[in-house]
Length: 108
Image (cartoon, rainbow, N blue to C red; front, side, top):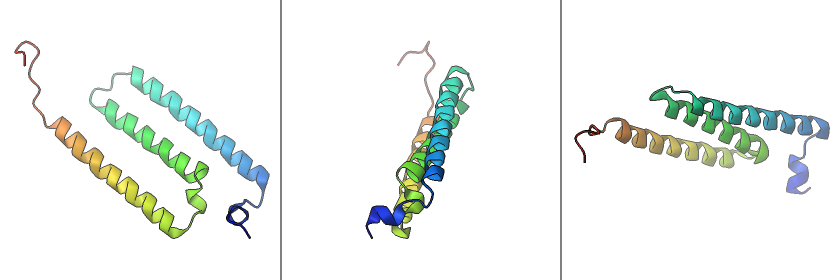
């Protein structure tokens, strides 16, 4: 039994349907990203955009990269990658949000 046969779905129509649903969800999230980009939410624009991006990345990884059907070690590496991404985002946003920006009239 090959690796492809081992992970092949029992019902190909159901698998095809799930791909269509995920694709439609990705389209809806892309539309949400562009819509939120046009709305001024103040400092929350970044948080909303990052949340939508993480959801889209999870959908792609789980369904198109087949992480949901993979072995445990692959899932550990995916979780570790997201944990590391979270650390980097928190550090970046902490630096960005704690800076004192000069007013435009004072110049640099």
